[in-house]
Length: 471
Image (cartoon, rainbow, N blue to C red; front, side, top):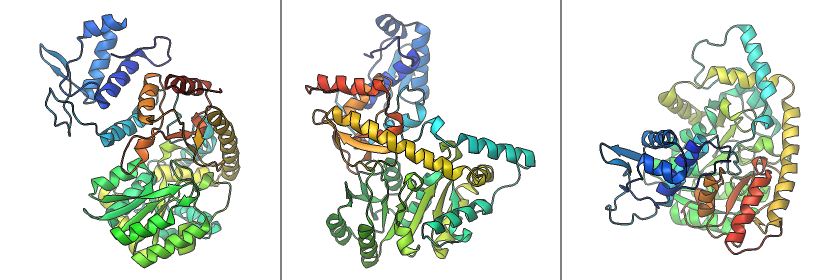
């Protein structure tokens, strides 16, 4: 049922939990299916009954199994499971995508994480955070009152000054601090989108944003992403046909493709948005990872039709959860009110820590070192993947990701499920598609993709699928 690897650094309990969750998610184990008894599972897999008890208990607590008195453990029927016990339930790739996204944050113990969306611990600005914390502790005022509705004033002022260097003319009053970019996107979506509205998004694009918009009742329309930015002809046709309320997009170092839209395309996107009365929500969270000074939609538009979103979670620390949103005065008032309604203020403490890290004198040096390190990792990982026969979508030698596929791997979801069984978190392509379908594309985070075990795994999978390897 589940293949265990006793020599793996991943605990056996975790291997059992992940293996069974994979079988349930891909419906190899159907709703209401009975699992082997604890003793039978332990005997057949050569593990202790205590290990199986803990694994089953975790799966019950997480909602994957249910325990029936005097009967045993069964796969729990979940929302959307409509087939009878004797029928095969239809596969639901959106369910799988939600499940896989959950794994990213629940399975930090996996030894290998080439599909994740953050930086390794030792690439982050830990020293700057430590110095900032020491400074705050010395001041003796770390646990004060609630923060301001728009966030810590000094940090907002620093953000405004920094953005001025990138030709975005704002004051601190135009900056709304948020709990990471996710809250900023959520605020923009709740302000702009009503049930039934058509909304444009990058395709492929950001899974969590798609879930968020679908939850609000939006009809998602994918704008094809190319290696050189946007498919402008497709964008123009979609705007005319669907008359969307908004376009949520990531022009720079886009996830998952890492493509960059040139200035000529940005001008055309703004022209089309004006013509069709569409609000543009520019997610620019990777701007600090870009070694090149590039214009943004916000710098060309000056927030007339653009809501701009940034974050420090990628470069200082994901635990900081400090993001920000820029908008014109009227929208800013409404977005601030939405923030207060949903969660009062953001954390003044983390905002003050971020402010200290940004202003203690080593921030720019940290960013340069980080960009150089990512560029070098891009070169090495890209070379290894091409040696194995992968096609790379785009190679900017900057940012976090490579979007790649192999001619002998038609289903990256199946590959990713094998990866979880081997203690590896991959980024299967269907997660990022507006209409999930089988695809061979994978997202690789170059900062987590240099371990030799990753390439051995990929080489083995390619050979099993019938392809060769030159690795």
